[in-house]
Length: 210
Image (cartoon, rainbow, N blue to C red; front, side, top):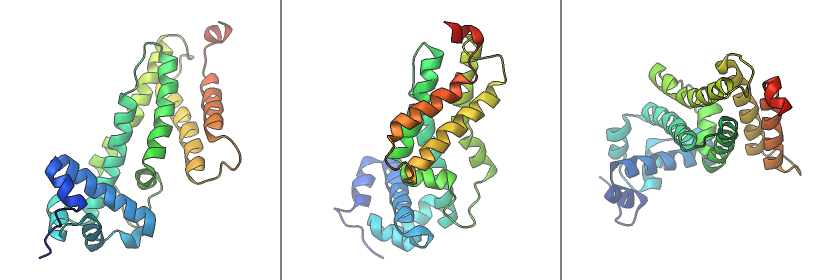
């Protein structure tokens, strides 16, 4: 059995604790997937890159399918954490800040974003439990929209519908940026204009008149 190097990413993460070890292994797997495509996501290759034995991966994730699901969950966990960190008393400003947090998280976690929304692993389907967990990030957005409706900022419409439209605008702009389709356009400026315009569609007349 291969002995992990004391200077390997695995050794450093192991010393930091189980959570750090899991995060390091998932980061390694996501980077290999981004770099080499599905062929790069093998237990042997992940172990070699991380500097550990394959038995570590089997113990922690079960098999390759377990790694795929863990990557999916980790991506949405990071998104939820980013959105949960947004605070503020003004509901519309808080909603706008959540949109910017969504974009920042996607740019900082490109490989995870691809796993979450582009399905680069052939045959992978998240379990029903993992799929339900992924919707928590959208629920945070829906809750923030509901605050805007209660405050009279948005028209009294279904918060879930409004949240879905705003998410589609946010997600579309971010996906184009990550794919490199922004060209000479200032991607951040375009993102702000698009999300502001989408939110303005739902503004209550009284709020618009102020």
